[in-house]
Length: 264
Image (cartoon, rainbow, N blue to C red; front, side, top):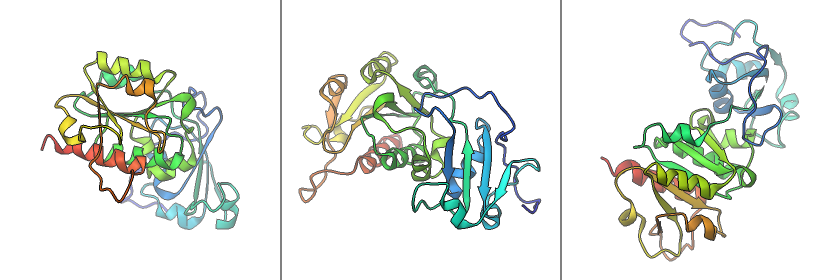
């Protein structure tokens, strides 16, 4: 990659560095990321341990930053890169293999900025939806996204591509027991507001001041009863009768915007 003085250094740790602690993101081995935004964000994340980058020369040139001289890069054509990722994945000339991110614990989030909302996902398993929610969480300043370890997708290229770099920015907390996590949030002073289409209260009316945890369930099934019972209130988004429901990632974006807008 030609060195240019106007580009910032890509700060992430190269593949020669070993010993990164495994994460709780259901990824036991290396993670393979693709696409410019996902790869660039991972390269700029100082907490990432990178193993190897496969790239076209055009892909390298598109990066906002310089790779270290000894960074492990293997140049390949687009067709070869296509064999490294999911079928028809839009790799944009960049495929990065790296270690999973370290665990993020709920206590670390609770001890942070309580003015920022926490998003809690109940059995949202589609990686595209989780990635899109991470992207909205980054856009609207959420403190974290919380999922249950057994009922959420692992850290992956699909999540990262849908998140468009947000997987490196927003803490993703994986917990064993979602109900217990909601109890911990309540103990820390968060108002737990669950989104449910059958609720009588409208979201804007139920949204309180102060710390809030937004709780969303999977499309179709919605919130499980035990999770809903651990919410302080349930509310619905006021959508028209022409549509029965919204995609969970769209609902999360609307709810996060409403939380961000309440202080303006």
